[in-house]
Amino acid sequence: MRRFPFFVSFFLFCVLRVAAQNTVVRPTEIDDVLINPGMGIETFNRFSGQALNEGVTWSEVGPEAPLPDAPAGTVDFPGSSVAYLRWFWFQLEPEPGHYRWEIIDSALAEARRHGQALGIRLMPYDNHHPLPEWYRKSGARRANKPDDKDGDIWSPDSADPNYVKAWSAIITEFGKRYDGHPDLNHVDISTVGYWGEGWGPYLPEWAVQQQLIDLYLHALPRTPLLMNFDELPALVYGTKRGAGWRLDCWGDMGRPGKTFAHMLDLYPQQLARGNLQEVWRTAPVALETCGVPESWKRWNFSLTPILDQALRWHVSTINVKSSHIPPEWKAAFEEFQKKIGYRFVLKKLEYPSKVNRGAMIPVNMWWFNAGIAPLYRNYVLALEIGGVVVPLEADVRQWLPGDSVYENSVSVPHELTPGRHRVRVALLDPRTRRPAIRLAIAERQEDGWYNMGEITVE
Image (tube, rainbow, N blue to C red; front, side, top):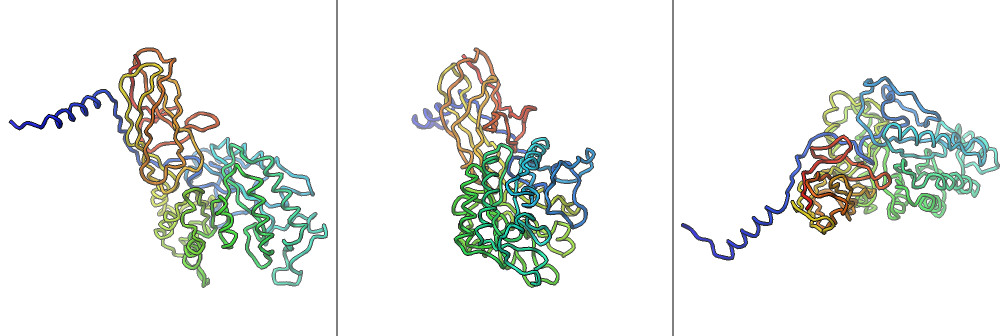
């Protein structure tokens, strides 16, 4: 008979004894698409359950009143936690200093009703939607002339102090009213040019551009901001000060009749030039399709490299302009949805099987983020023991893709009665203290908590 040395036998005895005193839970991982806050496919200028755009067209004009919901089960579109809406200046300030905040109030209420948060951009003008009439008649300087090639649209001289003052006023008032709003997911930094994207033939000197970017940083310090991609100095400036980034021609692999392709000639190189490949670690990345997915089909684009590039960019949200996804691509988009953003798997939970009320006990959790990005808001990791919620000291924003460990001592609630009690886990909304994040594990209960097992209180 083979004998182990005494120290080996003693070590095994200790390990087995500790194991017998602890409960070890290894939850079952699931493969579902998870609809979670701040990530996934957005709806655009509408909300979940509302009719989609037909064909390859869409409108840039945000709704001024709630749209009707479509009959239940008739909208074939992925579930969505973010509704992204854009409004023009003339919609929100039809007269100087008269702001139609009821439009945004209504949209925030609609977002909540549909289980979404709201992403917003305020746009000065574009090639079809002019600046407010009162501004054009105010004596402000115009950058182009009526007989210029682009003369059909009144383009402002954005270096004009009148422009800076008027645009700063609406953004400042917007910030006073909405910064930190619980139903606001993000705001785009919008400054000059068409759609406020910060590019075009009439850019002001850098000092003015910088001033207009700083405007958002000061007006919305508690709200996630996204910097548009087109102009590298602005992109670098905004992201270095905490903004995430967005681009709006994701998927352009070379359209018919075009010699320039955003995905092949600009986007990846632009990130490298600006040394911005790691922005995603602390601020979100958002993409918007060039055209819509059906456009990609008509242009004979291959889907795989488009989706793969988004994963390399660590994207959190995608705007496909509330358009239909071609049936033959739905399976690929579904797998794509399982990877973008964050995806939390609780691999292991270990805690003592028997405890005393008020005692400090060790708790060990092994978490795995199977997504490609972190969670950018600090939700509350919590245990529930016998119906009593025990918040844990963990910053879940640090759970980057890969493994994370929570190891700490936890106080057993004094109010528990002796006996066996259920143990559950959840990530809670810091405002409502209710479960807010779906995990990629089984045993989710109707109230959003995940059942982990039992514990005996003595």
